[in-house]
Image (cartoon, rainbow, N blue to C red):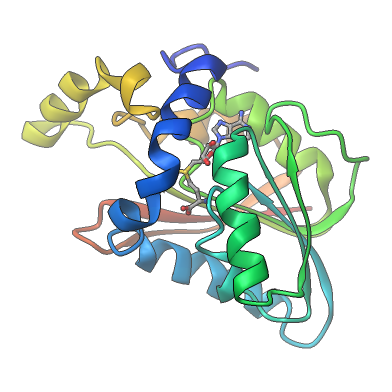
Length: 219
Ligand SMILES: C[S@@+](CC[C@H](N)C(=O)[O-])C[C@H]1O[C@@H](n2cnc3c(N)ncnc32)[C@H](O)[C@@H]1O
């Protein structure tokens, strides 16, 4: 199953995030922090009494990295080298020794073997990748049976003023580097094709219920 509804390409992502990298934390730290905290809490609940191997897909500047339990062994990947450079700086400055690797990689073509990780997290990434279904397939491939995929994402409004605004903004998706409109059906339709995955949680998050925490379990 592929999701061809996105106007954002790899080239758009690379040029948009090269521009965003120096100011990303200033603009996106506070407003998206509740989602990172909720995502990290879901991961830390899994890591409560054991060491886990965690993959952070689209790690960006690494704002969520300090939020994970110190005994989670973290691998972060991202398409954008300028974003990864900021994440590496954070790891060094904050001595985040639980981060084992930060690597340039395409979320739609992960180079890890099947079932490499106990958990996979992707905060604010599905609206950015060119093909959300391929990305979800890859996350499901590399997570172990019994493991979790934790997503934090803006799910677009289906009707009303917000839907009109998001559709209008959607025409600027390539320049923004993400798609403001992102219906639940993109995740829901994909999930319907995956009997090996169960939806554990779908919960709206502040600010203003703009974002949604989604937890999936690989059966
Ligand atoms: C909105 S940022 C989120 C960063 C971080 N997770 C956070 O919470 O701040 C989205 C990130 O996804 C990355 N990205 C976009 N497409 C990607 C792809 N195909 N493979 C890997 N990373 C990608 C971008 O470079 C960017 O760093």
